[in-house]
Length: 215
Image (cartoon, rainbow, N blue to C red; front, side, top):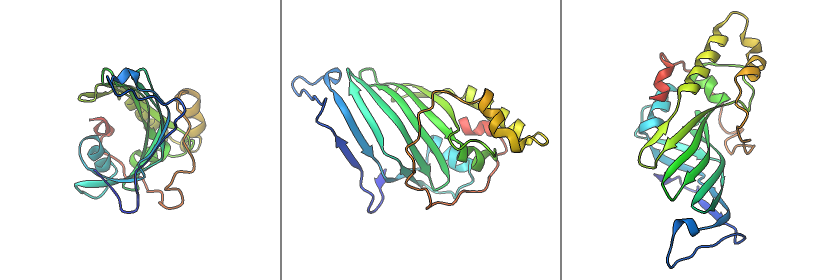
């Protein structure tokens, strides 16, 4: 993990609603009314879930990947961290997002990973989705043992792929999907993304087996 040249990590903490008792320090007593973190551009090890995504998108094989982030707003109260939506781009190709809660007292995750419309196109070849379409994947468990519940997401991608391949359905898939497949609790993105107008949309790189995405 390292920042890219001329891309510093910027953290801003408002003094309104901020409390940090030092003695004795207890996580549940930490209060942060508003904190903004801009990770900017980072170089990340290409392992685990990130490697699965880069392989599916047929990106170049490398030990590291470049990631580009939007800023994220955070609140902390009574040991609970709340994060709004953060979008990120992996190697200028795979666009995902995340949001949710983290219980700092118990190191428990109640987060979500989102697969965006442009990634559904570039990785799975699914076209004509609304720009704000996101498939939500719950992430639970702990810091040491996160668990991704991809069953519903897998079913949705299979359904979308089936619709895409049906004769004549491609042109109306966006409207059809929004009626019965769109999650209603997806937080809005912070547009424009920092990479908008700077990165070209990739053509689809279809995977032989979409279940590989969730291994």
